[in-house]
Length: 248
Image 1 (cartoon, rainbow, N blue to C red):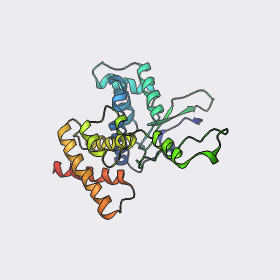
Image 2 (tube, rainbow, N blue to C red):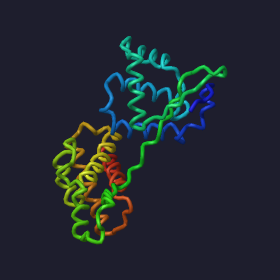
Image 3 (spheres, helix red, strand yellow):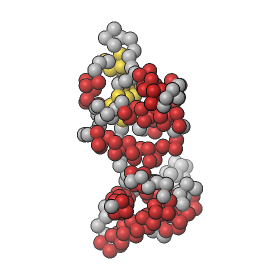
Image 4 (cartoon, one colour):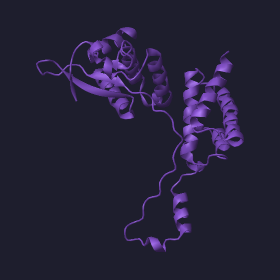
């Protein structure tokens, strides 16, 4: 998609955020989950792109050369290369953090790209995987319900398949209520996001302590009141309140 180049103010319609505060909030969540996937140099480029997207929250039309110069000055001559910056753009695009649009001048020649940041996707409770449909040659009338249930159970990975990045103590508690690896990893992901937002991501013991408090509160809400439509979102809200209590 080619757009006509022009003043950054002309790209206001591409912003997906109502304010700079909302944009910063979504950037914090993106970094909490994907920061480790960028090298030090790529991260410097990404953060520079954040800063150039402040005038219109989430939208940047600056030239790569301009941003590279800013990075060079910020780090006292220790900048990054154009290839590093482009590699960062490729990763950020693949992860869904940004969408890149090509722009062109009135004469048709290519101008600087338009970088549009996307909102961090809202977390929904993981859905159970659907069973793979049987081959057409299978006779459904001869397939017993017991066999179908067995296949369905085998298609779902249990807690023993949980990523090694999730602390064992975390897995041990969550598995008693949610046994799927995918669900356990989702709760850990939201825990990391909340910890990062509150500058506590390096305090492992504190994070795990708050996780236990928050998770138990969420389970109590589920068991006693049965009024939680989105357990993961509710859990995330409790986590943030707990971290704020520690801060104040």
